[in-house]
Image (cartoon, rainbow, N blue to C red; front, side):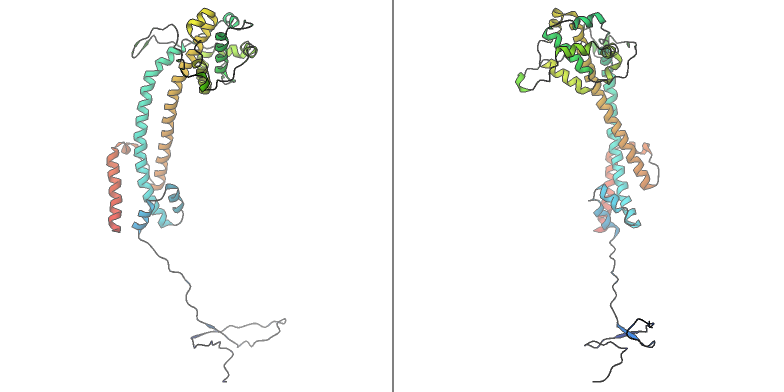
Length: 346
């Protein structure tokens, strides 16, 4: 067999040989020595560089329409090209969202203003019944050793309305002026209306836990309770709506709690019932206004965030006057822009 040079490495099949001179420095610890003139011959290898596939922008835009905003924000961080394409999609979405939020905010604001106009006189009307009960009348209501059931129920309702120490107002306050007429006509009542008595059986709904008379007397004779009752006109807005719902449930399940019955039993209990009924009516109306005001505040916050985000991705300040146009025309423009993209891909 013919001797081959040690500088060539040839397989079973003939192939192109790539010769690359490589000098190896000998060391004292190596067991074999190689000449500085020896060469290594390596076979040529195919290129391992992967080919990148670039899709048209229209394909990306059509795909981005199917993704959520959260996924688009993640894709936006991949590359500068995808960032520009995602910004185009987000810009279209945010403009539609701004128009919808602007329309909803206008509707909710109109309803809230109308509710304020109609129900604010009712709040002043019921607030006037939160008069300051005298210490003698309060002592009369708590002087019973074994109180009538009506007196005990009214005192329990008053204690439930107070709840914890949620009322920071402790000083004397002046009573606000109350209207004598309502928008729908004059109202002449001697006391606020009480909730209607429930007609369902008592067994259908478990009654709230009943407080003992000794606990009620101890609570109502405390100084902080008397201070809260004295400043109830100013502190009624701090009564939690959950306490109001519990008291409503007690009165609705007890058909004996009426003004006529309390007037016959005790005038002090009758005045306490007037206060309880006025608080129920006032807090129910105030909660309705509070819900509308909270909804309007949430829409304002969403609108502001959406406007800031649109300004960040577009690099400009959004003009609110331009968002007051008709929602239908904006949707048509948005659909036309989407159809143009579909035409390019078709």
